[in-house]
Image (cartoon, rainbow, N blue to C red; front, side, top):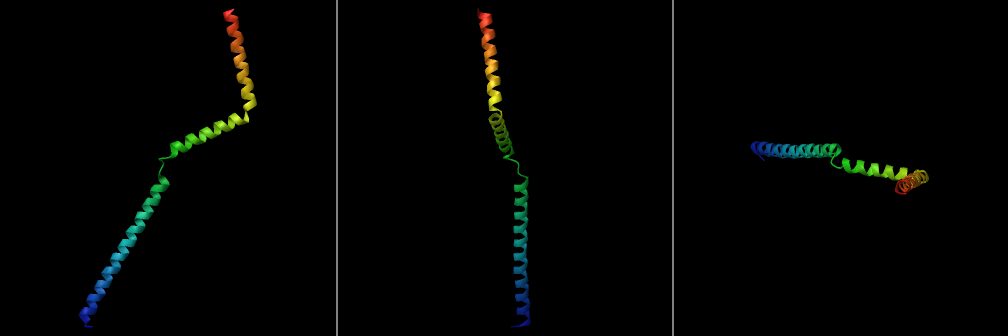
Length: 88
């Protein structure tokens, strides 16, 4: 192989290596950017917050079931007796 051919082959190899490095670098940038987008995405946060609030409310109802039942019964008994007093 002549010196010119070796030099041309070397340049060609360097171009291929440079292109490969360029592709790898762009691939890594894109993956890093998509990871950042994933970590900062808040599109589903409203749904998650709503579900957590519902779970907490259900838990409170289960914990204070007896107290809530007696409170509601007392309120309805008072309403019934007061309405009976007004009606007759």
